[in-house]
Image 1 (tube, rainbow, N blue to C red):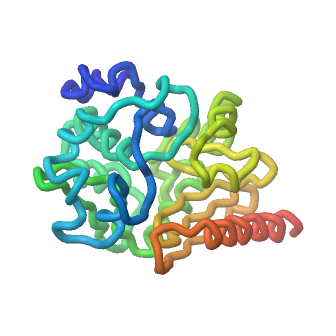
Image 2 (image 1 turned 90 degrees about the horizontal axis):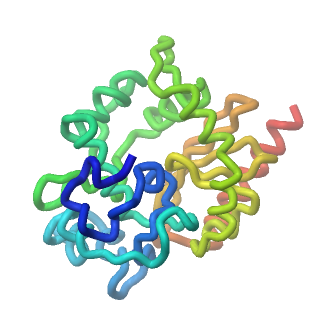
Image 3 (image 1 turned 60 degrees about the vertical axis):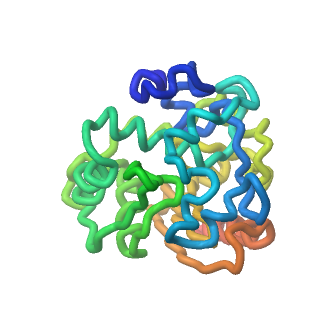
Length: 264
């Protein structure tokens, strides 16, 4: 399905011709600077904290207004490249397709069914639209519940189907096309995951690992190893939003966990 079938405001923009699948897999051609360092244009303002600075610069006129202005750097579907703005556009698709507010849809179809213990917190732009790329405030226990649902092939603890088995399986075992798009990626983190992929918002560490991982700035991690049915959640407070050396260590720890579990 095309993005513009749901978000009509983007019909005459660089998102014309982009699909929802390409948003999910970060393979649109959208030009966007994903650097979390001081300077312009970057994500520095969003990385510094909450309050007015959260939307200063990029989104002070609203997420949709900004999305209408970004150009394309390449053809849609050509390669993987992580860009936060695609998550914000995806949240708009979710609201239009689901017929409700982002937070309400998450609560109804995800947070409630997994049996979350605590409320989650989502963010909005100055006009009340979901600022999904900032992420969510989630307790470690509930992030563990979310990971357990994935390990359980999309089933809640009470057996309720939350995600389709097909959706879960294609996240663990994507097509060769997804792997090819990942190999050609200009995004530096992909270089630390040879043989990996990005599918449905998860990073695959490689076919030989049987592991996928969700990553957040400042060192947040949800690590899943399917064969051993293991979920590892780590919350952190790195001194900077991103660190190549700390990320490399983090990925290496993940691989060591896989090796240890696989040897049992």
